[in-house]
Length: 504
Image 1 (tube, rainbow, N blue to C red):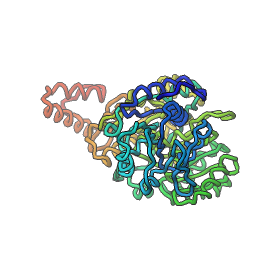
Image 2: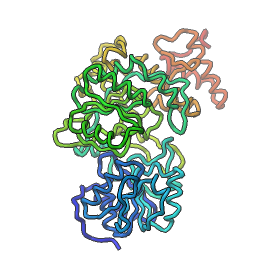
Image 3: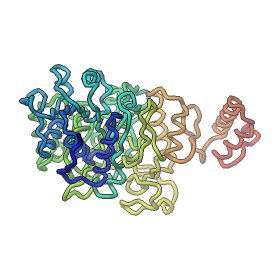
Image 4: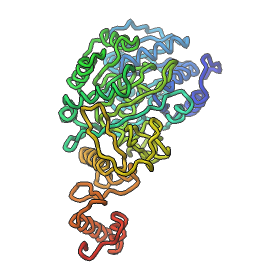
């Protein structure tokens, strides 16, 4: 029976989401809400209102501790089932580690909550959930799709979206990040394995003295003194970034999955206290870790996963007293493919990949390198206006001078770099060629002109390149049954004039 008393003050969107979840309990709902929006608070409220024995599953210590602390503060006694903790079998709510549940007898439950439920397709989760077929199942996540972008419809039947990140930024619940994004490492030939780039090949492209020095210099210019977390490709990369900061006399520490729990807690506490300024990590702080005062995220890990992209940046978006904003320094170029985290997504439970409800719509400031929406007339950071840029600027050095890429996104060299990155991701994932064309069009609002897999500059195309482009348009027209005039119109759209006799 659902209780009627509410003992904690919920925000309006939280109250609406709780009510919607309770109305859809028979549908195995997922509660979707951005990082920092209070998913644990909303789930705690649901646990109290239902008043039944509850199993709360999570896969990381930080998530376990956070959930148990919130439940206890809410007056709901929570036991913890995880190595290193004293269990309490009499507690109505059991907060349990997935890894521990696999090895132990399962506690009785009429309600099962799966935290970070985008992991629930894993075999370990499925083995556990198979023993709770009669229980109500609720998922919690900010990213309701697998690592490869596909939906969770085989596990859940309804999505309840509590709020969108842009709404929460507008209302002050979250900070909208200011993003500086660089030229990405060349990822051509790097394979995608299980939804993301192969770690070994990725590390070889990113862990260089030049790139690591650039990370430090850029941080000094854009976020000096701000509490910062850096996301690296692997342990060696994270340690190299840490050492680069230390050589610059910045208090920095490294942690990874092998760091003992007590040492990890001490490192994060020093970051919270300001004793440590930068913590570099490898796949530890992407989920389940909460430091609202965190001000800067350094993205040194390129990722093909939209899920991971959103999770990393979500770490710095929480608002708190004394914090004046969030900064993201994207040295991996992930924003060129995935866009800003405040973009609304077309979530789906089907096996189709999650999509965007709007094009990327980003412009790079030609003065300071900030990424901002094309709907804004000028850069909100320095006031640069595209119409006043005075034409194409010389592309400055990218690395070693503390500058993320400073050039207008209308510049051909920038567009060529984005095309290379998009194509690398397509080839690694095995997508059809049309995927790259659509992603490029979403990014710039124009179709790419390509010869021999290379982007062609329409202002500087040679006669031979134009001839090859026209021949390709003719081949497409013939394959699709179009008249030859279709190719001529495409050519005119690309180059601003009709194909001449010598081109044809």
